[in-house]
Image (cartoon, rainbow, N blue to C red):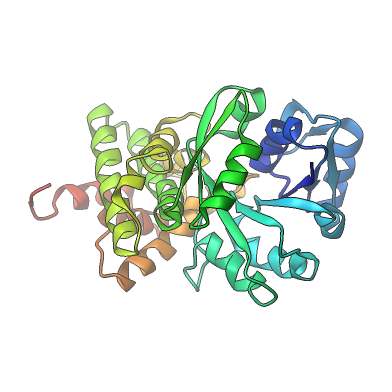
Length: 331
């Protein structure tokens, strides 16, 4: 059994290393910070991003990309979206055409508006056509690391690649379903973080359960509109990578994007909130990119537009009022 390389030593990358280690002879976990990689190798714990969970002995943290990539049959990409291209450019000379690449990063690349699987193909395509799949679904890192049951989607137009990942990753606590709609899966994964910020704003403003339910439902509607316009399938957004992930991120106490929204609703500025956070809230970076992508396809995203206005300084109550005052229409 070939080794697994996980690129990204944050909470999600570490949780996946813990959950997937029993399925591989060796799991190499690339950690960007050398001092953190050293502490993880010695103490068997990610004391910064996922404290309280021990790494299995077969997990080998390393700050060296070449070491992580050596002999890997599957490369799992779990770095923040703004760093994916840079990391891929570094591993491009090391990559093997037979390797399967799996993106577990949720977001859109600023500027290009590319989905993460498209970034993988764009960079590695300079040497060969990579086999790429997307891992997505309703998961919190701490619950996965704890061994609590979770179900996710592995999506690729290459169904053989998706099936191989499904067999390799599935186990007693992690169930994978294959999917052939990477557009829907990746846009659902990216935009649910934006809607989660809006859900957090509702919580911070104490608007009640009715508002939360309406926000999640209409948020799903606008995510689906954009995904379908971009070539995705509406059925995908009704599944784990759409509705499932959206509900979790909008309601779960462990959601970073929801927490950003709560603090915005309580009156804190986005700069103050982000400066107090150690981990990345992808929705903040995704909001503007989502609006730009929507403009490309002439799709209206009213909730996303108001989230952007709040991030730019609009008082949250004014954003809610503007949403409620929009012209009336059929659902």
